[in-house]
Length: 507
Image (cartoon, rainbow, N blue to C red; front, top):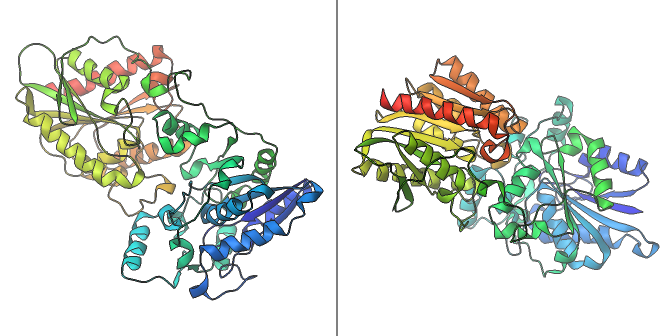
């Protein structure tokens, strides 16, 4: 028999688990939703004295109350901020805990406070400033009804449930977010299940992609004791789909779930390192700083296409993105059309790095334009996947030398969990300022719904302002269709899109 100990996220109490807990009990499990001191009305406390350590003790008390000698297995479930006290308790009671479930949350590390996982980047910066000014105590006010999206997608949550969530929300003691999590290491031996909420921007495919990129922090996720589930909902599945969540928790407790594909010599070649689908001839490559120029033979100056890889990509990934077969393939395809194809590396290692990546790209473009072999007045930019947000800078009053902007399976609005509500990287808002700039958009028909929604919002905005948008559809294409989809459909789309870009550069 499983005993589920459920720990809610910031501002919320044990009440959010009501429907999920009822379904778990109906299935024969025991459930204890932990009221956290100073947040849950069932356990009041003075905010100035409530810290992460206080909440760890709350969870430990719940663990110690279970009679494990009767054969009952404890499954600790942490949602959002709740994973921090869950891990703190599990580390000290590892012998009593059978499994830890990460419910749509990050991977807290030893010595790092929960503040680092606050999704709203602007709020995180303001709280950091308060700390640096010496403000260590106090509370963080709960979100207003229209502010919950800053903490995660409310997809699937009914209006009534959202009103109830707001009405019962409580201030979060600051020290619960600022006190570092301290782990001795015992928790590492406990089996783990991650439950990802796709509408909040986290999917199994995206995690696998990060693992394939070689992120060392994620290598642990490929171990046999780690499994995953994915729910097609927003950040609060206990409110949007409690029955589905209960089913997933029961399956997790039974050891079920998807296992990630490991990396290494015996592992399959990851998608980003598979061959480009077109047979394109090699051309000389000239490396300048963080830019590679693929230059065809013959006269110059020539127009150039700068290809901007997606991400986030972990720092130190090898080979670096500008050497990936897809990017090199595109650059050689451009060279075969008589253009100079340029690939570049930028430092989009985390969703907080878009400012830095934008600076790297601007510097790379200037390196390309300064080359004597390049016609500096005829440049195209071509973005992929997560770099799609970076198109916003170039859509906003584009320079005269930018003759075309292209994007393949782009993400065209920040995903909810990225915490970028107030950032400038919103292409749908910027396209109204693009003027006559031609935009070529390669759209994957089998795109993840949460990404496809950002593309459709962009297309709608482009239509509303009569932007010069050309859509190139790959109906059965997946995200990263060059290496993941049928070549007989992908090849014509690539040729079509490249010919469009060439036309805009040479007319």
